[in-house]
Length: 330
Image (cartoon, rainbow, N blue to C red; front, side):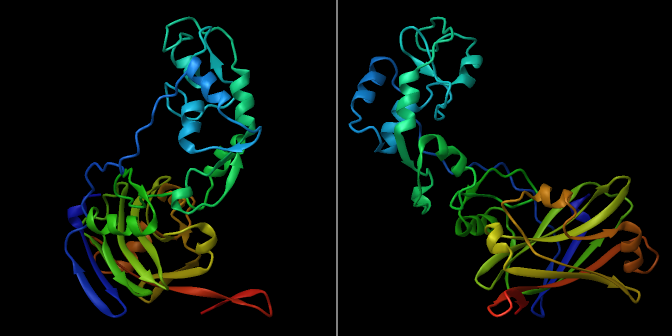
């Protein structure tokens, strides 16, 4: 869908804002630079590191663990089976295949030798979550740490911008600034909205996405999406809301969307999805207000040669009823 044919007029809490140009696609975005990895020291260095651990179960600094258990090829933490060459150089099982069974350090054939001592040492370790600097207080056995980190509530969020494949990650305050400064997303304060979508040639529907607005209300941030795409053979328009936070927090809020014209209207009410769920996952689950093209043209009125959709909505916070154990709208 040609962005130049879209006009968006937004009203937030009865304050109208005019947008004559849609948000441009974001240029290639680099992730915040990560701290460089240090390749694992193998062979005799591994032996020295192993002997330096005093007790059978110890909490060791992350830097020492990286030197001991970091694969020298991919720099990821190694998990059983950990392989080694006859000279004692270690690497993970994934990289053993990638290097065609040749030690990347001495070029000796690896064979099927496992470093059982290193695997045993790993079993004895308890390590902090790698997101401890972001606030996670948890400590885990080495082999449970990876599973936790995949679902840790303190792990960074992916950029929720839907108009490009943006690789930026960070916490919510960082992403709000990133959306405003880098993607030029409109920021509004308030819990109600009124958007008008205009397209001069609605017969041409290609997959197109917009993040129209980020709303700040109830001390939280919400992303309103609107897009056009093919659902089977039928072109449709879809609007939905995402919550900038975790799923458990998202359940504390609800939102409604309404579109109409010519004496008819469609309404949608639901819970915003967390930005932990990708934009595509939410879209493909059809979790939002879906408007068939023929219905959209009917709402537009006139000669049906121009799309004019007005979508209104509001966000509210659900309050827990301590007596009934139920949520009631605020």
